[in-house]
Image (cartoon, rainbow, N blue to C red; front, side, top):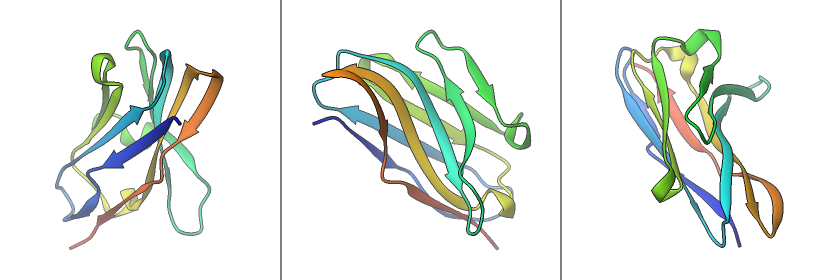
Length: 118
């Protein structure tokens, strides 16, 4: 069974930093795009950042210059380094991956809560 397991969320003060990790496990042949989404209370889930298997990245405008997405293909892991955090970054962050296992799959993590507050 393929699954994504996230870690690294928590409470941080405005201006602080957090690093999220998401590891894929199971019988995986290859992983294509990986990404981080977030959903704040009362809002729709939005794409925060995505990275292709070749390392190409894209970000939502509100996090450009503050967040960095990266991946370690050998470990089937994607990271999100979040700097200069703001209260409006508070949300549940979800990892997402398009991969090939027993066929093509889109897999989601369980979510990790990030709270930015003084």
